[in-house]
Image (cartoon, rainbow, N blue to C red; front, side, top):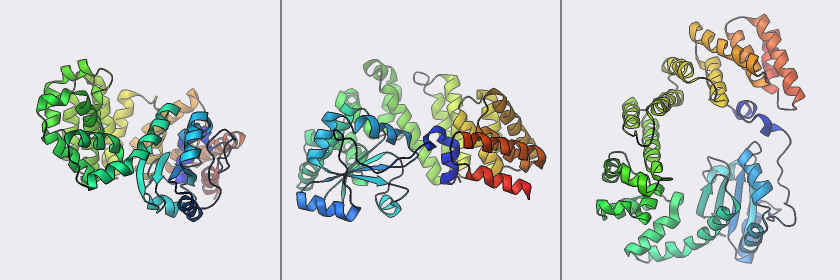
Length: 394
């Protein structure tokens, strides 16, 4: 699959410019601890405060957004500086700590007790008011968990507990959610608090709750016009993850069928496009390149190549894993059109790489050198371009 350098080069174009440091924010922003992780834990024990961890990567655009606009918000900063020991975690530098916390996406926010145990987490960028609300919700978790462990099981408390847990839910929490849904009459799923829980805890497409949603989708759309579709999309995502985990084409076929059964949520042409993209992604993940290539060709022929990053990703897959000359030639034709339309170092590089694979080395070298010149002009990492040039000059 992709190396970090390739991802940075091809899919984070402008984000490679400049650096992203561990320096403190401006005086009015969140003040981050200067020491290492062990020292941060010691500081948390001494001051009897939890730790807020901002897990970021140097190439992460949303991380930069949060750093520049949200962490500097006066209300956010005041609360975080008063409540937490704040720690920045560079996931590419502090790999062992990052892996220990199971961080898979950036930015990830961890709320950690003084013993180093995570009691709340959240991913993705957000606006200041949402971020502040998130932190305050996180601070409720230890007391809510303590109540649950002491045996509190009232329906009102379970709703409060599940709502607070959200994406922090583990297997036990999901089991609690499943039991709660079983206790409800179907019509109660339309009630606001239960609808929100269905969004938080996706229901399998063959579950009682999702079948009720499908039968009454008009009512859900009418009552929750801006969010009802999330029930469907979350179930689709759940089915896709199951297909990936089991590497099951049968599950993918079920997903494709499900997409066609949601006309009130997804238009037919959009459903077809989503299905095609899902198959392409599935075969990429399972590394079935003989099935991936024709699916990719069909997708880009039918739906175009306007999603530039997806197109470049596919082009790189073709360079690395596809062998049929007719498929490679098709991708090369599209790359050439891309260069004519908007020349940049990424599509120039991939154009050169495919020419090399098709044994057209003279043309490949010319384009690789052009790609290098553009990359150097933009001051981005050009290591893999230089490597290609070296290979072509041998």
